[in-house]
Length: 281
Image (tube, rainbow, N blue to C red):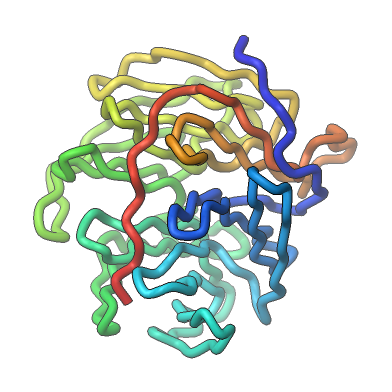
């Protein structure tokens, strides 16, 4: 078992989306249901929090500074001076944003889901900085972890209730040839957020599994990091050398949450992450 530390002690209802911002040396993370975007500076311990006006599924750094936000009613841009504007506004009753990721070409791949988690009620869409939107997957239930291989030729994706992490061939913003990388066995939890490391291995946080797993590109289980918080939600490498694995957790739906549920945990020296591109808009 690899030792973990508490990076941010918190009680987030649905902590999610850890993302290392190299431009500021801070971790960006969020509480979807608490409608807050947080930052954490590990060198100083300084924390910030910004409240959003609706549920926020993801917050990713932009190339020119600021953040791109995957929100309940669409995707918006937050400028460095805190000015907000919509990039794509598409309210759908009963639907909200969930996880998102920035592709190697700087586009945002943003997921959605129904509040009632109705089968097939969500989507995965690709958005570019000029506001162009294209639906990639339309029959999704809970759109979650998305990531790319080091050379960008493969895309990994988790639709949580399926228990699967799938892999696609990826080229020029187009995916094809969907197939299974791995399937989480009954009783071990559900695949939530994921990240890909410098060796091309896929790290997956397991909702109701209290763990992060590392899978090789061939789908072989390579490593398990057990954590005390049952609802681990997402993971990302951070720190100046991208060797520390940050893991977000949730309290929502737990009758007796662990004291650390809702906190951000970190496993120092867990591996070597890939530099994450910023959104081009």
